[in-house]
Image (cartoon, rainbow, N blue to C red; front, side):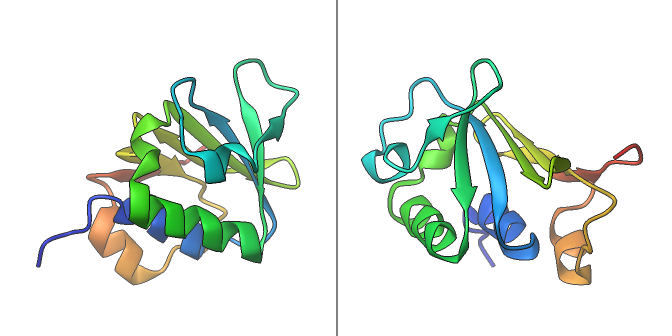
Length: 121
């Protein structure tokens, strides 16, 4: 079975809780639907995207339609200021928090080749 090239970030979003903060570093991002949802953040070089149910659906739809994640240099996903996920280089790989309940199917599909589980956070 051929793996969808953008399936990793979508699967990550689907196992994370609702109402998360995505800090995105993507200076060459041109996707208007995503850019319209971005806000200034307190972190240098990062913009903030709050993902609730509706915005998460838009994010996932845009990823399927336009594969915009290739323009993401780095993404940090947090909830209540707790780091849950870091993605790098177009979200081709990343690190997920040990505090996230990671389903077995996700581990089998991504850990450790594409996604590491942090032993620190």
